[in-house]
Length: 549
Ligand SMILES: Cc1cc2nc3c(=O)[nH]c(=O)nc-3n(C[C@H](O)[C@H](O)[C@H](O)COP(=O)(O)OP(=O)(O)OC[C@H]3O[C@@H](n4cnc5c(N)ncnc54)[C@H](O)[C@@H]3O)c2cc1C
Image 1 (tube, rainbow, N blue to C red):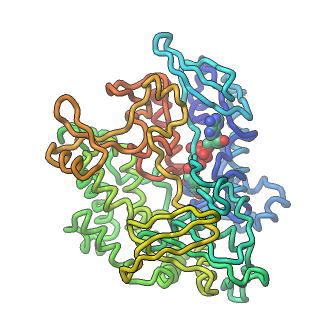
Image 2 (image 1 turned 90 degrees about the vertical axis):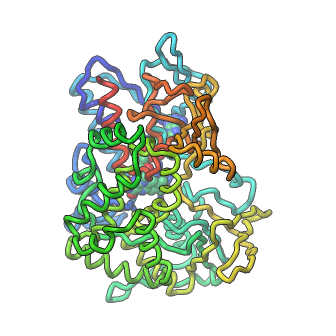
């Protein structure tokens, strides 16, 4: 957002940044709040939107000591490689410095307040200003506010229940010796972060002369084990060669085409239309053979077919096979196109998702989202190698727990309750439990800036049912459905309502010209795709257009 403001060259505005920490740029995932030395990004330089200098160019300026610490050889570094998150954080901080330099050169006025936590935001419609409260005391007044507070993992039991962790972040807390099985909820990238840390504190990885990784437990952790629990017993797919960032894919529907479709479809975006145009159509041109197989499939049929492939295979066998497929894809610099397009579809759906009918949103959540989260939450190569080595050593296993499992905190750790594949009820106690489901979509009531709630400047995100009949049915099924004075039914989705420009919207549907929000946990209902650097790039480009119009 700061880059956009600087590029606008507007010398008639002044910018104030309030940052809770003492550093800009690294944010949560790329600082000690979200990473240790062993944690890596899931994207490579070529997928990262350009800030000021390229990652490959910046690497050349990094001191030898730092590069050695992260085992980076600058002569072998290329833009298709993932990299240590803490190193990437240093890049982001350096880019922020360069942007500040640019702002000074362009005479754009800005100030940075470090160690300054925003505790409340108070809208003042009459005066057309917004107050920002820092540390519960000081207040500053602005014409416009952009909320970029990013990730937040609510604490539910951590701190009161010993060895129960609501998230693996900050990961320094997982520097634990565990001579016992550890329960992990989830199997995607958040779980991989926890695995990478715990594995290193309870054993060692070694590479043989062929580069094959193996794992050995430490003498004082002979009973250490990692037990992953997932609904469907699947691991995410392995990262392959990706052509480019989602943003540079120009085979998807334009904003104008989407707007015209919505206008001609009673105000709704059709999920089937987006599936045809943003997924099947580009595949037809690039992978005609794959297209032949899927061309007559509905979205649900396509998802079922792809899931079936995974359901019949042991997840660790599949990991091995996908790792081999990905090796080939990387060597040949050839993407696995349908998987890449699924990422593109998810990204493309993110922005207009608020125009889906409630019926289509429920289809998206039930059918496409689970496939997307498996296929596009790519596990990088080195993490895949570690998972295979851990499994080979008998230290890592995956338990399918179905949809109705529960986790009950104990005096220490937790008990996992689930129905196993044979239909038997299980209650398994673990003295250490880590919730690794990833950034949750937070609810309306979790919104942290309470004056915006009490002043009704923000409203809960909701989607209209196309059919009142379907709305009534969902209401009877106990879903969070409301009816308005016209008899229209609405499904409540998570977070606050925003318009297409990321401006908050009140109960009457009126947008607020002063307050923008791009903090993903609080807009998850209307922006269901996972956040990433491409999201930051896209959302800030939309906001700056409106802000400087
Ligand atoms: C563990 C992890 C790894 C990830 N890895 C990748 C990846 O490899 N590639 C990718 O594209 N995406 C990745 N992501 C997605 C990630 O969301 C984005 O890449 C990006 O970091 C989001 O940036 P952000 O500025 O919105 O949020 P954040 O990075 O969370 O930054 C928010 C900033 O706001 C500050 N802040 C928060 N609350 C307040 C407050 N009340 N007052 C003042 N300051 C406040 C924080 O200190 C922080 O500096 C990852 C996410 C996670 C959680």
